[in-house]
Structures are given as structure tokens and as C-alpha cells.
Image (cartoon, rainbow, N blue to C red; front, top):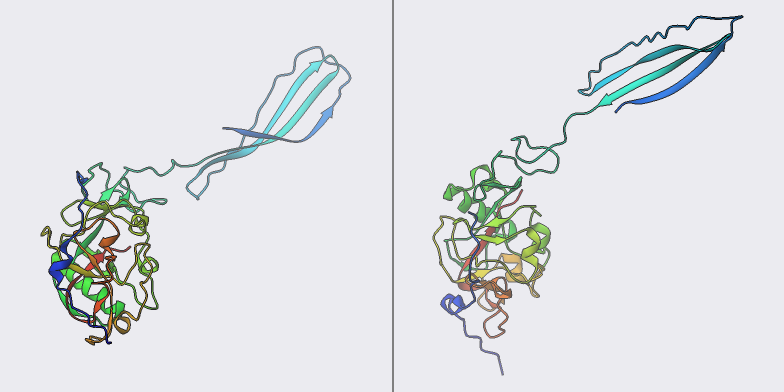
Length: 295
């Protein structure tokens, strides 16, 4: 008997859980060289000590001092000791520190302030993440590259992403690519376009849960709800199947479109664990895309 699949409308995928209490972003080194000793017949008076030092500069940005030091010392009747030594002193500039307004070392940004809800937080970048306002009614997205291009268009049109719109990708896997390998591993937080923290770092996306649902679109509109095309399991790897022929087909007989739920924060955010509704047919989906900022 042939299996009859019932296409589930996007409205049935609104179920999910939302995390309560959402977090809003509101010396001197001396080396002794060669020495020689001169002995005189007699000496009844103390010899004076003389020191001669020459100093050279440096063009490398470090302060350095070098030269020689000669010392003559009366050690008692009939004996005088002369010692010559090389001297070098080196000092370097201050170490980079967060808050000086200069991007140095491993800093992603440095805006010289401690405002938590701007684009730079503790010298790491706050990256945007959103669910697309647009609904996609088939699995033909032009492959993962086509989906990435759609996300970049949405980010550009929102006016929120400045020049970084070019770095956005879709949270989408196919038979040949895991999204965890496509996502830029940013050191900073991932926040919705309304300022709510979704993930404290890139690794949170692969943990099986997120801090807040991604139910805000590129314009900041909240609680948009609905299903989201992902093809991705909770650990960021591709779900089994053909993924609508790697997101290039809309055959009604091809049931390989795995979806998540934008209102969820548990594993359902990326893949709803319900075999009765997941995967879906590669046509008549009415589903969104998750879009995440890259480098």
C-alpha cells in the first residue's frame, strides 16, 4: 500500500517553547665581557672611577640603549683593576587593551566604550541573526549558495547590517555541506535585530538549544512564527536525505525538506523531531530562512 503523506501547513509548526526571562543586551640587563688586569709597581693614592657609555637609537619602534662601560678600580696598594662591559637596555610599547579605540591582537572590534547593546561588546562583534520575513514555497532555492544570496539581499534591504550584509549565510545544510562548517566561528554574541541575545557564541548553535527563539525578522518585527527550512540537525550537521536535490528542486513527490520552528528554543528550532510532519514535501512549503551574519 502506498504511503500517503499529508502536507502540514506552516501554521502547524508554530508550536515550540520560548525561554523565559530573555536576556537583553542592554630592566636593565648587563653582560660582562672580556676583562684585563694591569699591575703597577706601587700606588698610594686611590684611583678615580671613570665610566664611558655610548648610546644608539632604533628605528623599529622599540626604545633601546646599548654601548660599553669601562671601570677602573683601586683594589689596594700596588694593584689596579680595569673592567670593560657591554650594556643593553630594551623597552617595548604597551600591550593592546580593550577600550583604547584601536583594534589590535585578537580583538574583533574596539569602539572605546562599554555599551553592551551596540555592535561591539567587550571587543568582540555582536552579529545579527534573523528569520526572513519572506516565505519560500518550494525547495528550489538555487542550492545553499542561492539561499546565502537571499539572506544577503534581506540583510541589505533591512539597512541594519552596514557593509557586513555581504557576509550573511543561510542556516542551511545539504547532502554535501554541514552548516556548522559554513558558519563563521565568531567570538562574540549573536543577537536578533531587536537586540535579544540568541547565542553567546557560535558553539551555542550546535548545543541543541539556543537562548532565545529566532522569531524576529530582518526589520525587527517580532513573533513572526512559522516553519523554517534548515536541513540541519541540532549538532549543526546535515539531516539525512537528498535535501530537495540539494535545494534545487520542487518535486511534490520528494519528501526531503527538513524544517525547524522559529518559536522554539530547544532542538526544534532547527529540526522538529516529529516524523509525521518532518521531512516535508519539496513544494508548497511556505517556510522562512534563518540568516546569520558572518565575518
